[in-house]
Amino acid sequence: MSPTGMPSKGVMSGATPTGGAPAPLVLPEPAPLLTRAGWLAFLLALAAVTLVAPLLNQVLPVGHPLHLSDYALSLTGKIMCFAICALAMDLIWGYTGILSLGHGLFFALGGYAMGMYLMRQIGRDGNYKSELPDFMVFLDWKELPWHWALSDSFAATLLLVVLAPGLLALVFGYFAFRSRIKGVYFSIITQAMTFAAMLLFYRNETGFGGNNGFTDFKRILGVPVATPSMRMVLFVLTGLVLLAFLLLARWLVRSKFGRVLQAIRDAETRVMFCGYSPLGYKLAVWTFSAMMCGVAGALYVPQVGIINPGEMSPASSIEIAIWTAVGGRATLIGPVVGAFLVNGAKSWLTVAYPEFWLYVLGGLFMLVTLFLPDGVVGLARRLRGGRT
Image 1 (tube, helix red, strand yellow):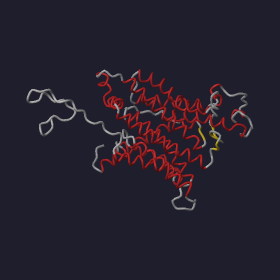
Image 2 (cartoon, rainbow, N blue to C red):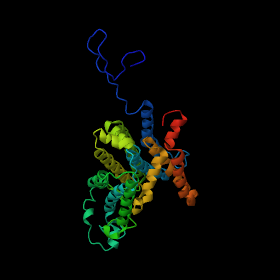
Image 3 (tube, rainbow, N blue to C red):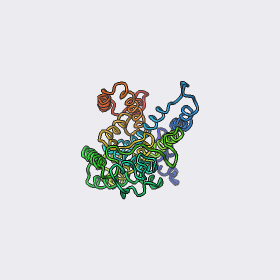
Image 4 (cartoon, one colour):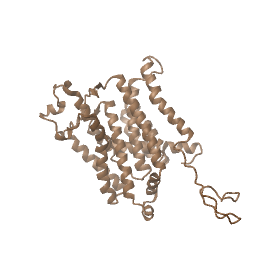
C-alpha cells in the first residue's frame, strides 16, 4: 500500500469499496537498458572510437600536440582486447560467482585461429618462398597438418575463433559443473587446463609453431596488415566490438537469465530448491564468456603481430582476474576500467621501473582485496554517496 492508502503499482488491488470489480493489475514499466547518462557516455565512447581517434591519428600532423601516435593507437587497441576479456570474466565471476583462472586459454585459442589464417596469407612471401609457413619448412614438413585444412578461408576462421574456445568450454564446463565442482577447486582445475594446453602448444609436432608461435604477418583479406589504414580499421573494429559486448552483457544481466545467474552466485542451493537447474545456466554463461575471449584474441593478434604459447601461461589468466577485481566485479564497466588502469600502469612501469612491476601488480591485488572489495568503480560510488 502507498502512504495514501491506495494500492501501489504492480500489486493487484482487492474489490472496490462499493463491491465492484477489482482494479486491473498494473505492472511497472521495464527499466531502460541504460539511463540517460549511460547512453550519453556510450555515445561519447562511440564517437571517441570512430571519430576522435581517427582524426587525431590520421589528420593531425605528427608534430601537433594533440596527435595520437601509432604506438598509442596500437596500445589502446591492445588494451581494448584485454577489456573484452575482463568483461567476459565479470560475467562468469562477478555475476555468477565462478572464478576462472583459465580464460587466457580461450583468448589464445581465438588468437591462434586468426594467426593460422594470417600465416596462410603470407603465401610465398616468407623466407623460404614456400606455400607452407616458414616454421613448417624449417622442420621439414611436406604438407599442412589436418587441422590447417580450413585456415585459408576467412569465413571458416571467423567460425573457428568462436567455436574453438566455445566447444572446449562447453565440454570442460559440462563435466565440471555436472560434478558440482566449485570454488577454489574449479579455479585450480581451470588453471591446470591452461597449463596443460600451454605445454601442448610448445611442442613443435603439434603444428602451432612451438615456442615461437606465429609472427611475420603480411596481409589480411589481401590488404597489408602494417599499413596505417589497416591499423586504424582494426582499432575501430575492436572498439565497436567492445561497446557491443558491453551492451549485450548489460542486456543479459538485466534479463531473467541474468537474475538467475546472480541468484546462483548468492545461494545456489536455494535456486535448486526453487526448481531451477544451475547446470544449464552456468554452462551457458561459461561458454559465452569463453567465446568473448576468443573474439578478443582474434582482434589482438593482427594488432600486435604475434601469438605464442606464452599467452596461455597461468599468469595471463590471473591478470584477467586482477583487471576485473581492480575495476570492480558485477559492474560491467568496472572490468573495462580495471583493464585500462592496470595495463596502462604496466606499459609505463615496465619501461620506467621494469624490476618493480610484478611487485606493484601483486601489491595492487592485495590492496584491492583487503580495502577495495568493490574495486575502483565501487569506491567512486561510495565517494559520491551511491550504493555499491
